[in-house]
Image 1 (cartoon, one colour):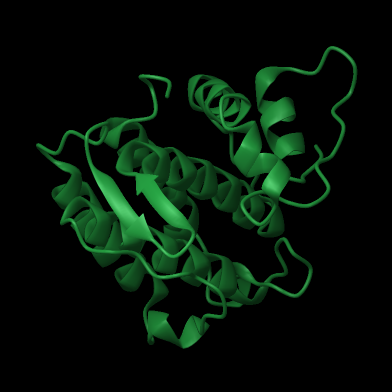
Image 2 (cartoon, rainbow, N blue to C red; image 1 turned 30 degrees about the vertical axis):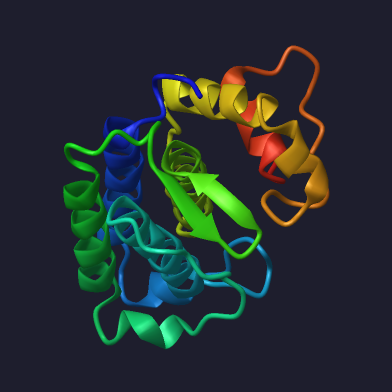
Length: 190
């Protein structure tokens, strides 16, 4: 795993999502994101559900399979729900050697470091989706996008197995930069 995709990288990616959602007006929470039947609320709930696994994993708990979820988990204040989850994950990851923690998962065992890398990718792409939906494009940091590309290149078995990334990545333009290539891998186009 790239050294850049650690707890500090997660904190940066989560902060980018936080900056994005705290800028939303009440009306913008209903804007359509990716996939087309999701909104900013649904996307934020998806991140909250996934990021809550970081806290559980850092504490040595077995993880469950995330499938169907209800955006109602955000309650009446999506930003507060997101913030609580992100702060808990950041706190749980403090002083944990993520490269040494192996967490039970229904599909096998997961290295906490790999889970962090997945959550960095998810936070970045959902911030990008929500910002785009609100008409305020989010700049994905090149170093984090590059680190995510490196992580997924080292985990082609997970990519090819499906379910982790989109079934159909978008082919980036010839000569595309690292952020566009990351977006393409995540099924988005500029």
